[in-house]
Length: 461
Image (cartoon, rainbow, N blue to C red):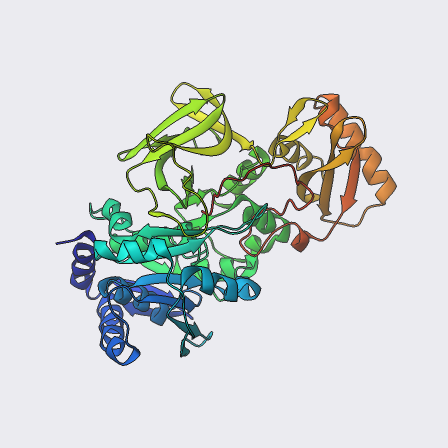
């Protein structure tokens, strides 16, 4: 029996356990599996079967989660989208060669359409010989054209065959990136509860945690900063949360310390993964440490010139629209600069984000961490701006808790930085922007001013 079918049979045995929390309602595993079977019955009418490239525009819901498992059972190729990529949707549909598309509304109703004249992708066509379901996700393309990534779902599911502790998991990470899909699979494979959100505002997340008594919150450092700045956590009971995992970007130490105050009952764990390689096992040195040990069964790591390289048994099948990033031995350069201390490493930042100031390397996260402690700063993003002599210099885009005179703010922050960092790291420009301008729809920092990368690694998790 394959790994997907093994997991689905385990889910059927859960019966009365809670599978989903949606719109303040609970759905048992028995009810959820009935939805899966209903979708399987519909596929004949929709002409969906092995190898069908099926797209769906959706957020997490009972129907959507059931559709995912039904498509995997049917050995189709899943292409999840969200409304966040509405303008890119036609291009993505073309790259993936989508045959049909479901569009879901917030009340869980849907429409179905056949895509006109899809052109099969060569990689997808060759993949059909495996006779297993596939997954196509796209990288964010922050410094280049988004890449389509094809994954083998059967291979992805293998690491969830061994039973582990189930969690009541907030489905925060978006469905159309590998991290969100991985979270969804692990939630159901281990008999946990998928907690769906009406939106990802701090208030909505806190309210749903209180209503559902969620125990696991996978999130991003940027969202935690938004939560801290909102103060809305004071209005809700978040004591049910026992574990918080974070990844996708570097965590400021100041944010990590504050997060422990907000969630005193929770362990805090750093995660690491790439859409091309999967999600690695990880172990934080401690709850208040940004040092982490990554790897585990099926993964090899090495450091070359302070850059992390990874080799994985669960490598993607390949890019749909870009060259293979793996070397002859199966290693992939992540582009992440790291510092090593025994078994643990500290991720300093990506090569694509590093700023070269007169030949000196500057990692934005280091400066952001310091500025977050300067007072009245809810969020900060460090970017590079061209300079005729130095090549580039540092600029800080800051969001404030309370209004402050621009000139006085600049003088205050400059003095604060000079006392705490080397002169070449001190921002020469300060810009006050709204908090919502600091992050993307995926709650990751936006570094549009930092156009330094000669090449980009594709961390879509």
